[in-house]
Picture (cartoon, rainbow, N blue to C red):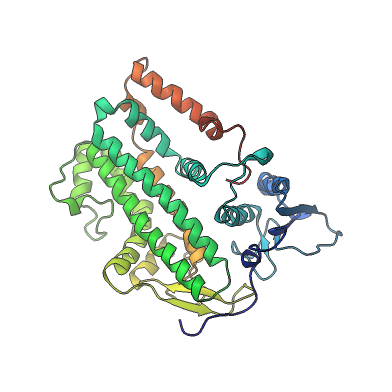
Length: 387
């Protein structure tokens, strides 16, 4: 990027540094569908926070000043010139703002710290992780230390992945300037490296769990060559756990993996990603996009619902340029899909022992507590507002 020290007005996420309230949100009650009603109620509940202004509006009422206007049909999942967003998008935009401001509020004004927040975030986004961790902990003597150690590594990486996504998304919502570009790129690059690390953690967890041969460490990887349609790792897993091998080979899983590895390879081995100041589109101000390697573009299109890659941030400018906010938002959901497909396919309950076994009983009791309420599982006195 050339000269881009200051372009256009501050966004609501810049103004929030000094604004009171931080954000002004209007929920258009007559334009909320039944399927969005629950999310809209959650947006309205944010009015409990004194540093936000949240109000419902009926047709005929004045709109007034607002940063976000919440309706069921919005032109984009990113803040637009008019600030029109869906209830789900509004919740995540508020979440990204508040957690980057160090505001981790439960109901009733109770707060937790950043560490507890991201513990909650990991356990809520990556739902299959808790069962695996619980079984590996209680059945450590049976499964071995290597499984628990690998899951510990996975948990740390998932935690940092969530942090990188939030930091990068927040920077991407701010005014396009030198600092924004650097901050977004830093967290975007770290996010991609962490994502491929998560995939490797998953592969090594299965390797230790099923005692697969690992004499060549570079063979322990979920992704395989699409032309060969197999790999040494997949062959070994197929012999030990055919149903799991089928999950790894699932075209949707492999499609997600093929998005991340070309970006990782470019970041690690070749030229770093470069930015572009994009003027136009649905924003009130210019926006920073980043050029992705060409061999990642078609996999992005293939993995998208519209065949164009719009939800991943493609299609706004030149073919290879990505909106980082959209990529981070869709990317973390995609990593969660792969995690669920792999970890969720393991019969962890059977690995804990037969029904009635003391270890299995402890596992079942702990997981029942987790399924009832994640907040209670973490010994929080109440549920969170926006986590």
